[in-house]
Picture 1 (cartoon, one colour):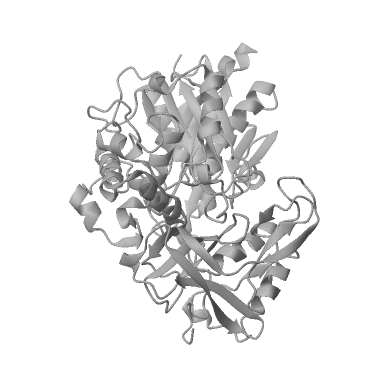
Picture 2 (cartoon, rainbow over the protein chains, first blue to last red):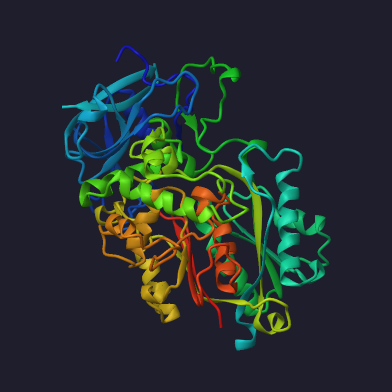
Length: 139
Length: 407
């Protein structure tokens, strides 16, 4: 994407020790989910314990960047100065993730053409040398 | 023990206004005003108040309020850990537990909100005049687990509650065929109730379904009139024991049952959590809690004479109607369409004050106030001989609820 999706006045992502590795992988254009190495359950956002087996052991599973639109909203109200409207917030069910969904944006889609269940694919937006944000477009 | 059963004996509020309109008096002073009025309504003296309770994100700390109000002692200062308005009924429940256990004798639950004096909910927090941060965009350290979770939300512009609750509502429409007109009818119904309520910010502003449909789109499927008001104001509720309530002027309202809760894996709800179980995603997340509430009180949905349901967004009320068993899952739209929620001719008159959609947005504590008034026969949309009132605090976030009764 050549043009920024959001203006610079939008807040920057915040991360703690659990989520920082996710953002580091994103900067290298790798979309990951956290995976419990004890029982295999996957999760996002990253968290200290597996909610199924309570193990603290985990690694990162890279996912292929395809998915399905689970739900969405077309936002018509700016929350930051000089924001382009409308924009789409989407919940994407990630293929190959063990059932993980993530909140993201849908780009390059006519709002009227959106349908829950439609296939979408990953597109990275490079925000700076150390920050890339995953968004999606119709596949 | 029966002599200590918790009763709601006083309610009060400041004037309600559109957000940013109350500037001559501080949010803190407004809290004091509401507490004083509620205590006066109860026929009690401030010197008898020995507890204060509130819920998430309250800027107005009980210890300071106690000092300013000149309370002789503060034995119970309590805060509920639930986001936004979800803890309103839970704060009343905590006050009830405090008086029933003997921890305190008279506890006042309060909420004061003056968004114009602080920041407006849903804004990005940095205004344009602040200029851009000169550093290259990067990940910043989060000061809490909640904020780290918000990193997976904020980066996509999900900062506004309307957009957050549009997500489960859109899915509900997809699954069950719920329509915007059905949501609109709910907003129109509450506006009609507000027309009789002199406290209601939108009291003089009648609304038709056409007005609703023509109102600007905020976050699809929510039009402007699907979203609650943004208000300045404060209200308070006084809780004491049955014994102390006996010789007060007004009839007490009893807390028949209270519950709070969130289902497994819910976290903050769909605002920050895209991974709520599929069967819970397009619900208010309150179904289990509702079942516990009915069982505790020994009551059923059909026993409710009047309901005050937290209405931050129309879609969230619809999902609560299903969660609490007033209709089947997926049937919320037709249930609203049937006119069930209307004061005139409805089986379940709901938000007789106009709710947060039309009276004021005081994080839903005004729904508890109206719950008390509706059982005392003081509502401006009175339900004759009402004996049982359901009050809820939020949906689609961890939430709480009360069943109130007139004995």
